Image (cartoon, rainbow, N blue to C red; front, side, top):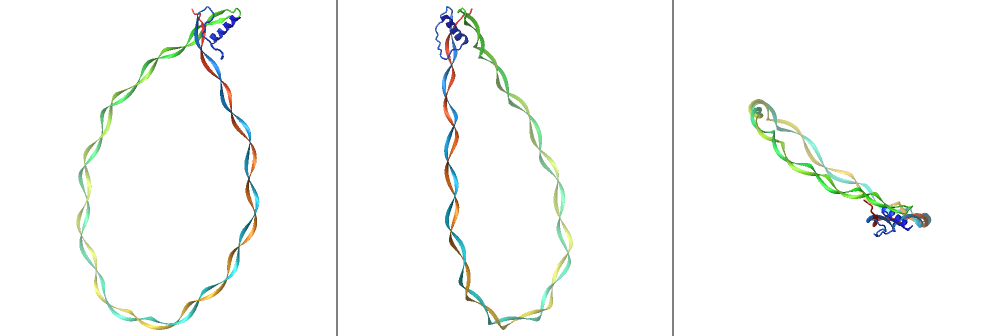
Length: 347
């Protein structure tokens, strides 16, 4: 019975490659008369960690809510009203009276007189006059002008050219291959253990050849056509407008004036003074007492009632939802390398 348990434990540790979280393997040889070697396996274990999470909790909160209420308040106010009063004032009243006044008045009389004057009588005469006139003339001139003529010239230039070349490189890469190992198997009926060969994945480093692009630059000669402009002189015939002077004779009317005497009759004003007596209205200001009514503003007291808004507070209960932190235990997996004995039966 004890031998069967040892075989079963060896099968679980070496064949499956997984150990329980609490087991600790030691590198001690198995009590079997077979060649034994030791391998390091990765074992997954679990530990407990505590994390903080949040949950929603409902609570009842009491708050003070403002509320506006209207109240009746009595107050004494001054009410304006208008009353009439009899008042007196002294005003200046204009009074008009007639006053006799004497003044000298100039009087103009018109007297006829014979007079003589010299006037200019217009006369028209035809006179010949010569004047210079500018006559337009067009003459031809030969002039030179500079003209830009386009031309093209070829020029050798060097330009950089980039090419890509594939270069072979060898580097080491990890490849998963199948490895053959011996696994002990225990017969449950007889309790005898045997070795069985099994294929397991294994990492190997192999040489891998890859192509890496390499950029190279070199200069290339290129023929470029460059446009240019050259200056040329050309002879051009141009018509130039000019003027020349000519003498023209023409007859023009000339108006002159000759003096002549003329007799005419005029009215001459003669002024003399006269004394006149007349009634003139004169305005004077006299004081006078006047009674009038004046509207005077006064105030009387009245008691009035009005509604005034008053703010009061009342207590209101309210259910709110809050996020409360709490701690939760969580199992976290981690890996650990252990030493496991393996019985080798490879031939």
